[in-house]
Image (tube, rainbow, N blue to C red):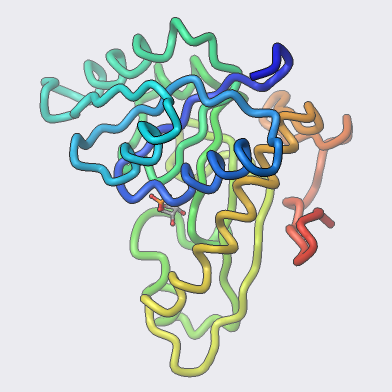
Length: 221
Ligand code: GRF
């Protein structure tokens, strides 16, 4: 790891395929990211194995061991403190964070969401897209604020909804696109090309009006 690599933590609850995409980008594409720690709220999360295989310290902090959200959040924040992380990536972290957590890391915490925000906040996004008959869907990365899936959107990737799609086929097509999106967006942070100021997303020092859109070649429009 180089001194200038962006120090990050990744929070997961499950498969961790987006975590894996980041690890692969560090190992094989020279992404200037130093994943200092992975936190999982589930001891059985398969994503933990990706972290361990890469030699990344893992903290398993089960929400079931704490009386309430605030106490669990506090334990997670404590685990992150010593690492002095510059960016927290919520990659399939299935917990709603309390206001103390979101305000402490305001502008330094991003979340990956499988829909084109502000559409379909919350869960079960694929079925809701299908029920609405939408012609396309996608994934978004946004800064985390107190409101669920409501913070300013940084970047998106779009995919068409095809005739005959069900939730599984949509998810299967979206996942690789999500992986490209998380790597390309985190790279913007590593290059210090994107930041947050007073509730707005800045890209190359300009406040953006629309989310950056990921193109097939990996660059943004
Ligand atoms: C992704 O679909 C992401 O959009 C959502 O949770 C899923 C996590 O997948 N927030 P994985 O654990 O990274 O495989």
